[in-house]
Amino acid sequence: MNDTVKINRGLKGIYFERSATSHIDGAKGELSYCGYSIHDLATQSTFEEVAYLLIHGELPNETELAGFDARLKAARTLPAEIHTVIEQIKGGHPMDVLRTATSALAALDKGSADTSEEGFIRNGINLTAQVPMIVATHHAIRNGRTPVAPDPTLGHAANWLWMLKGEKPSADAARLADVDFILHAEHGSNASSFAARVTIGTDANLHGAIVTALSTLAGPAHGGAAEDVMKMVAEIGSADKAAAYVKAKRKNREPVTGFGHRVYRAEDPRARHMRDGVKKLSQEMGQPEWYDILQAVVDAMQPYARHGLNVNVDFYSGVIYQLHGIPMDLYVPIFAIGRVPGWVIQCLEQRRSNILIRPLTLYNGPEMRPYVPIKER
Image 1 (cartoon, rainbow, N blue to C red):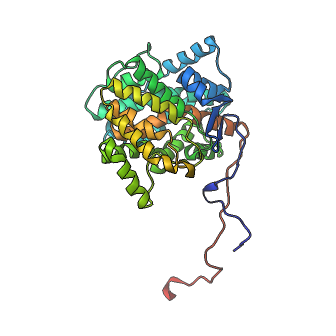
Image 2: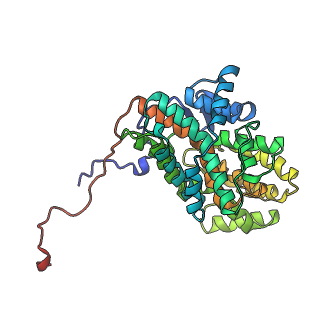
Image 3: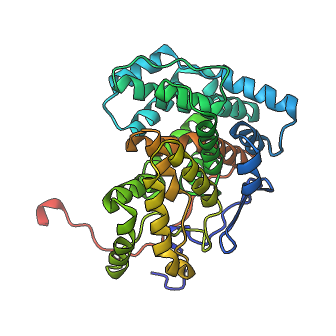
């Protein structure tokens, strides 16, 4: 065994590639997409515009955005065979259904095999439109309802809520869902994006990489934070019990869900936009207690902020879904809906200067030893 080799478990602190897509400054709590602050994008942009920015590297003009939006809306279709697949596995977890249906799309679309730049962009736009449709279609089928047809007059986020719930969302609710997708659209070399790059590194197609990313996101250590926050909120029950809950958790050296992040030492810059939205939506829905509990936890955690235990974006996301009456097993699929453009550009970047990603492991097993025939063991 070579004791001079440094092991960076989890590849922590390792730069494996260059990227012009997102920049994260964990110490300052800053995030930008293609040079644009997440704060500007969250307050002034739309998910469609951000998806265009990520895939093309520049903000669109009005004509370009209109054309991109038209392509997204035209792709809001699922083959009949996908409905059949979903029907057959409707009792599965929504992430398993989403992964399986996405894989089936590759088998049904001959264009999925196109690994050119144009093919990646075409398939990326299609998947950005189709992933929310799969989630909404499965949710309808598993509840014995006929899937709601997409509404071409609605934007990406509003149409998703319409298809999921069968009722037109308010402008504020649609905008908050839009912001949620923007904030989750891209975040550097996270686990699912890295996994997608590994797949592209083998010269696989985009659908295969997205299936890999979905499989990775399904792991609770990556995509499960919003669900865990809602479980915590339910356990706390009321705002006046939050301080005691936090005190008990800290005394037992247990983590408080929704605080701390692998890359941020300061507050997650995405969190403030979700916080403002949750406050407004909870008041609109007549359920301010959810926001009150969250803020009581934030107040109780304030003394630990200096240790890097600041609130992250997922701390607020779950309450938004709860207010919409969305079941917890859809929280990770919703994360996936927003993240598709980020996966697409990560795969495009990998393809443009492709190399097989093949790190090393340092062997620490037994020394060489003789083989003993089975009858002599």
